[in-house]
Image (cartoon, rainbow, N blue to C red; front, side, top):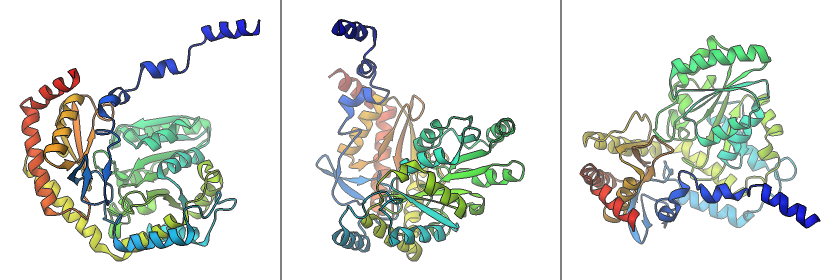
Amino acid sequence: MHSEKKSRYNKMTKDLFDRIKGDKGPLGKWAEKAEGYYVFPKLEGPISNRMSFNGKKVVTWSINDYLGLANHPEVLKVDGEAALEHGMAYPMGARMMSGHTKYHEQLERECAEFVDKEAAYLVNFGYQGMVSAIDALVAKDDIIVYDMDTHACIIDGVRLHSGKRFVYKHNDMESFEKNLKRATKMAEKTGGGILVVSEGVFGMRGEQGRLKEIVALKEQYNFRLLVDDAHGFGTLGEGGKGTGFEQGVQDGIDVYFATFAKSMAGIGAFFAGDKDVIQYLQYNMRSQMFAKSLPMPMVKGALKRLDMLRTMPELKEKLWANTNALQNGLREAGFDLGTTQTCITPVFLKGDIPEAMAMVNDLRENYGVFCSIVVYPVIPKGLIILRLIPTATHTQEDIDETIAAFSGIRTKLESGVYKRMAAAIMSA
């Protein structure tokens, strides 16, 4: 009898995995043809301007090692010595219980001082930390207002919010204020507050968030501002102190976030702000309360990297010399870089996903250039972005080769070569 009832229920209930088997998602449906090459590629060798891919040396434009610290001798020395002294396990446990050290405290003090905030709090990973911080900062009666092009970690954090949220058109101040007014009316009904979330630098197209205009509206509206400055930290502002300094509004940012995974070429991140707010995050961010502490080699390594940001301005100067040479050269060659205001260099082209795959294959195999490819659903159908990240390690030779390569693939794209190649690949 029991087995008959179970069998009947099994027939009535749809298998959870049926959907997964039938719908791989907008990117997953390309997995068989794309995996290992277009997605999940294997770049090998020391992180640098030129690495190995598919058995060949390529000019590498897809690594966020902005300042070239990943394989800097001084960084490798500190990383290696810390790993030998502590291993990768110490300290064990969450910081609240057993994973706390004086070096974690030192790194927090130095991060806070660097970005001109009262206090800072380390987190293990930027993505995880941002999701958890948004969850901790807002209660059900609070309202979130955020830019529609914010990073996935912000979107996921907003999704956890049980209260109201309003999204505004990307960097559109008219849309922002319209939604801020809606949020204000809603907050008056709920008795909650308003959290505005923007990025300092939008990582896909390279635009700076309109922080100056957002902060100016604090004179008319009561809200707090959280800024994700993953790409601005180390690359913008005096001494690489970030987008808030670049725009002269760091004081108007209530909670500042930066990651160690880009300019610092490491792992980890931090939040900075007023002491009482940072203390609140320390005791309420579930992703940190119940997660293992950042390992000591990463903490000591971050201290060294931060010191180099402070004392070696030539790194940022070289980064921007390369950025200007690359972007000016591409524009002079007639390429559309959109409205980038940062080191991020998106090259906009027109084509479908199969064409993009054929073009990138040609770029890597025959021109020796490796960059990231961005297609639908990240951007609208019919558009292709080839996204380049210049670093302090690139050379003028790298830049010249890349501009020549891009001119070559553009001609093929416009003449239909890649459409024909794609058709042959897809039918194989």
